[in-house]
Length: 141
Length: 111
Ligand SMILES: Nc1ncnc2c1ncn2[C@@H]1O[C@H](COP(=O)(O)OP(=O)(O)OP(=O)(O)O)[C@@H](O)[C@H]1O
Ligand SMILES: [Mg+2]
Image 1 (spheres, rainbow over the protein chains, first blue to last red):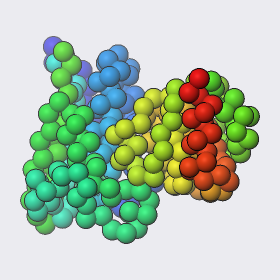
Image 2: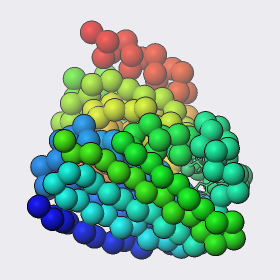
Image 3: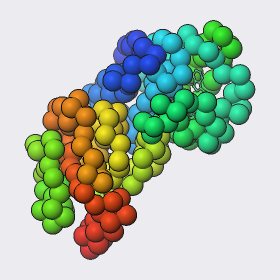
Image 4: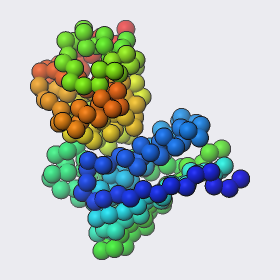
């Protein structure tokens, strides 16, 4: 028992050239641990969407990744504008993304719904003007 | 069907990622919305899009797609092509529209 892996990655707001780096490192770690591919796939979708949300909407953040015998836990914490109405943000199609971000094909308002669909458990809390904390839990058994 | 066979049959341009041309193709997905692809595409599919920036390859790699086809004569950004080489996922191109290339690809791989 006990933690098998614990890693941390920093994410810079606005830096789309690095978006997905943390998610790809986490994917590699999970593959190395021999986690079931179906679980890895869902974890990757949820983590990537959370990572891109920090890049697209916040100023800076970090992603903490931990695995033990029972679960994968990924905590994405940022300093940023926060989310005023979390329920509304979770709705498919809701987005405050800028036109530049939309031109890149982000900003469909599908990220949080994707996270909800793919995570076994998703918890979002946010303080306007301070930041957002998203916790993804995946059960291993 | 491999990515290489699709390149030959549909006369596609290969921008980068040649080392991945032996990847097996299981189907395709057409979208320019990145979260749509993230949520709905699946491993082994060919992604048809007009997006040319580097995040396309980040998604192709995370989803383990077989190849990406850029439509309407679009060319990849330099760092997009570089990442396609690193990931060994072919980045392909055509002057056809998404509609045309999707129709042809569907005919080709439905058998
Ligand atoms: N970390 C965050 N900080 C501040 N606002 C956020 C954050 N994550 C999400 N939001 C808000 O919630 C909205 C919905 O997020 P969601 O990920 O569903 O869609 P999106 O990021 O706008 O578009 P997509 O994910 O499809 O590219 C965002 O437009 C933004 O207003
Ligand atoms: Mg998003």
